Length: 290
Length: 348
Image 1: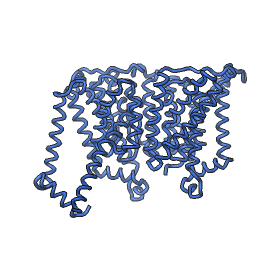
Image 2: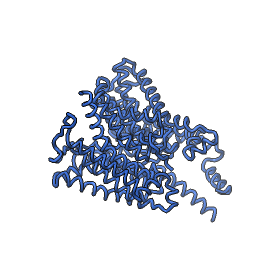
Image 3: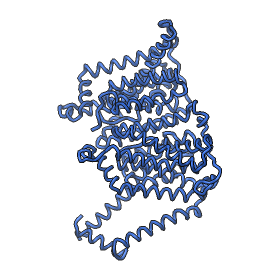
Image 4: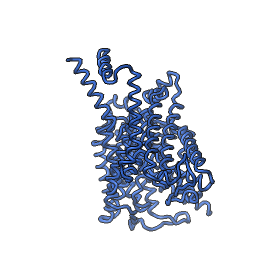
């Protein structure tokens, strides 16, 4: 019975972590699919979402933050598309990736300048503050909410990609950009949609991370490194791969901290290099850059 | 360029150096030797200790930038984990002396070779991937190293966040720890190392190996079809640039006498990247000059706590507006002017 309990907790905790990672890394994979660019500033967007969520929650409460912060991030995503990705589309993908890295550093530093260097705690909203008893175990309600949000956004993403026209176009461009363009798909318009969407997801993840992790100056680097590992494991650009890799990553991270607490920090890297050794292109069907 | 123009340019050069190419080469070598000697000695008499210290730091950053720039320009690969080698070799040097009682020279060799072996294993895994994945993986590997020195289990070796003081008794290459820490004595070492590494990178770039690397960067498939291996050259290039970073990290630890998790941090890697971009990645002079420029700029802005902001801004500005960097831009400008003037002369 106790072993069952441990396993259930393990799975629940890894799902909670994976929920955040899925929201962030699927956003990265989506942009990559359309623009062949990895947004190294994605961690900073997540950090901005978290700090905005912190500030808005102080004024209007958690639920307002959960709506407003992603909307503001979506606007920033639109700016990113118009001011960075479009003007630089003739440049090499590496250069654009480096520009996003630079912009991420600027944004992160600006946030530290505004909010200072210390970590901030965010309380879970009263409705989600307690714990629930499930299968004879007590588990924080907030984490269940987190898992629901993660799985919910995952499902929404899958449904959108599978059943909507724009989702079809996104898949088409991701699979073969030149053929999709020849068939009349407007990749720029899609990219606008996808960039703002993935920035908004980063905002959601940031707000959700507040009560679960903490809001601190190093959160952007930690998260972008985790997401990059997931994107590589998943096969660069593969969304399904990213989701599976995020689940795997969450499990390895949580299991590592339970069974090998001394070495847990290295668990994701071990996973990364093991996967690379077996499948250099990752587990999903990613597309090599053009 | 038509044959006529070439002769005219040669004729002009001839009037300056009076004769054959070998004489001209000799003059260049003499000029370089003069510059080298002047640069090694003059600053130690003219500049204050503070300026020398920043200058030497700039040269070290410049050499690290050289390693980043070489791989960027020759193989189209961006390394975002240069700090892991730079700081990692310092840790190994310190641990080999304090825990395993190696002599300073043996510890130095051990640290150097271990890092090379690490680079070879890491490279074997990651140079197979595409350039974007490569960039992500070097970042991940760098973070892995910086996380591992903070591990509780290795605290006895690495002292966690406190870092390690690196002192040694006796001498390494005829210099004591105090000599290395002395700014006036360290400057000529950093200066010479920058020249040696710069020339090494220059020679590799000009060699057949360099040509193969650039051809692979241009079109890997074409090279494979032409019967060239594309994996080993890139792996060799990765190990080569890590050897540069390796030397640079050893010089840093000998000079500062201290290693800390900060020396492994992402900001060191991005600073090196910025120094490379500032100077321009296409030659050896650019990144080293970029490192010195960056160090002095950092000294100006660092006091206000804006160093990282400066880094971020520099990445964006130099990639978007000045992709050739300052030195690269100057060379390009001079070349364009000489082409223009020779054209003008031809039309006249």
